[in-house]
Structures are given as C-alpha cells and as structure tokens.
Amino acid sequence: MTERERWIPLSMTLAGIPLRGVSVAGRETWFRVPSLDLAFDVGRSPAEIVPAQSLFLSHAHLDHAGGLAYWASQRRLLRLAPARVFADPATVPAWRQILALHAGLEGVEYHVAVEGLSPGASVDLRKDLSVSAFRADHRVPALGFVASEVRRRLVPAWHGRSEDDIREALARGEPVTQRSPRPLVAFSGDTGTGFFSSAPREAFEAKVLLLECSFVAPEDASRARHYGHLHVDDVAERAELFENEAVVLTHLTLRATPDELRRAIARRLPPALASRAVPFLPG
Ligand SMILES: [Zn+2]
Ligand SMILES: [Zn+2]
Image (cartoon, rainbow, N blue to C red):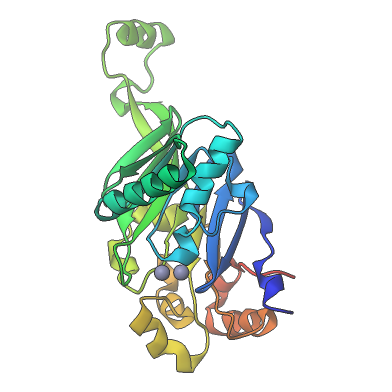
C-alpha cells in the first residue's frame, strides 16, 4: 500500500454511528460525524468536511488544523449557514487573526465564529446534543471532546407519579425533569499518557472513542513520550478503563504498513479490548 492510499477517506459505522475521516500521524487528521453535524479537526479541509456546521479543533498542529481558513472560505463560496469553530481559549486570538488575514487577502468576509471552549466547559449544539471539552496532554495547548446525546428524564422523586400530576407540575415550572447526557462519541485529539488522568469518565463510556495511538513498535515508546503521543502499550496497560463499544485507534504511524499495524495491535492488546479495538486503517 502506498503512502497515498493511507490518505483516502475511510467510512465506518460503529455502534450505529456513521463516521468518515482521515487520520495519519503527522500528515492529516479529520473526522466527520454526519448524524451530529459536527467535525473533529479539519485536516487540510477536504470538500467533504466543509458542510459540518460545528468544528472542534483539538490543537493547532497543521496536520489537524491547517485547512481552517480554506474551510471558512469554501463555506462562504457554497453559501452555507454561519458556522462555529471551538478551540482551546489560548489559541482563539491567533485563529481569529489567521481567518481575518485570509478574509482580508480575499477581500471577503467569512461567516465563521471561533469560540474558546475551556477544559470542563461544554456547549449545547442542539436541544439534544452537547459537546464538552477536556485537557489533552500534548506539546501545544490541546483538547479532547465528548459529544453526548442529552435527554430529559424524570427526577427520581417523581417516579411513579401520575401523568396528570407531572403535567401540572411542569406547567407550574417545577423541576420535574433533569438533563441526562449519554456520551456517544469521544475524541482524544493528539495526546500523551496524561489523557488517562485528565479525560472525564464519559470519554471511556462513550459508545465510540476515537483514540490517538500513533505508535506500535517497542522501539517507538520513547518517541511517543517525546512527541506527546500514545503507544499501543500505553493503551494495553490501561485496558480495564475502556467501557466503549468501539475504541478506534487513530493517528497511526506511516512507519509501518496497515497489516503490520493490525498484527501488532492484535498482539499487544488484551483480548477483551482487542475485540473492540478498530484500527483506523484502509483495507
Ligand atoms: Zn497529529
Ligand atoms: Zn499534534
């Protein structure tokens, strides 16, 4: 398989959630989740990520974020609705400057707002969809995200009461229901092992976890440490943390072929995790 073929977008449906993306260490990473109308990272902004209404940027490395201005420009060209970009607050002024410079050079206005999302904060994208951010562990300010379906459920004190009682209480404005988020998709961004202590429990309970796992070869362990990336052995050592239906191993190195990567992952992960691990690789 040529390097070029590793860059062809992959489509997968995992735990009932369709995903599309590219993720190759150091080269390009983006994921689109059409059912949630959002994207995690923008890569070099291929055409198919342009329609996503909300974009969550994990960090500023250009393999993840280099296409931001092109994305904004393409949205304008296609007359798409105003979009929101969420990024680490420390990076927001620079992103706004970059977008303003490109808009100025093009003599146009982009309809894209860049907003800071602090670790621990969340944003409601729809009544039934919320995305929270957490701190990732990388060489530049980096975030991971958890997208959750939000339902309203009866608070326990109202269980067993009649529908009429509940309706009347609702009409009086009493707090009869409470938010009940169910984590659907979590994205680690690029991260070292600090992820395992900084990510919230929801990241490990989401139906699908997109987990960076750049390296698999034993001799690459120190490289992973140095560059703020995960090695498959880091994941294997913490296998009991993962309750996800699917753990998608992303950002895999170009230093090995897909077959070599698959074999190493199957060999190094304990069977209970290996059976749910999905290397994000073609073929
Ligand atoms: Zn990267
Ligand atoms: Zn990076």
